[in-house]
Image (tube, rainbow, N blue to C red; front, side, top):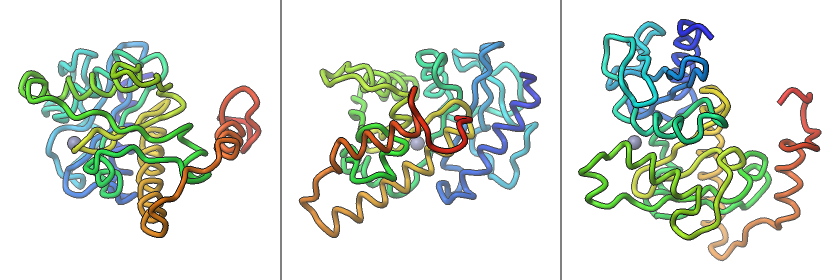
Length: 239
Ligand SMILES: [Zn+2]
């Protein structure tokens, strides 16, 4: 893919974040990977959304170095780069926001249980909450280590079962907020929107019934597997 085209796609993905109510001020960023060149395009740091343009998007290599662009890339670039280094075969887009309901769960240090089919259609299991970073990790390389904490959480580095990042396309980082991903930047935005909705619904569910249980596994299986996997039949068969 030409990088010009990728800049357009990443610009559109970033502009969709405030459109969907996920971002205020400049609190969010979307990127997309070009596997052929091993480069990714990301939003510039601290630029108001109304001043963004496809040309202002920044091209980086997988070490997070700027390859093309006049502006500094998002301060979270090292997190995006690390996720592509580890998962770039499976995912091609990453989004980070501070959307309120997802952040609320992250601040509570809680995973989001799967209380119903809205959740199960997109996340096969709870949306996990990663551990917080240590003081040393924050001082040493905060954004890089945020990526490492995410991958560690999915690969069972903290002793839990491993999680497939394709089946669970997002997570919370404790005391921080949501990260999501997908096959491209648009899919990562889509998952960021779903994550925020699911976080809101789960919080409301617990307000109405504090001791509520997750939905039965057979229902969650049905909903996830009819949209994903080898025997999927939902929709028009194009995803
Ligand atoms: Zn953040």
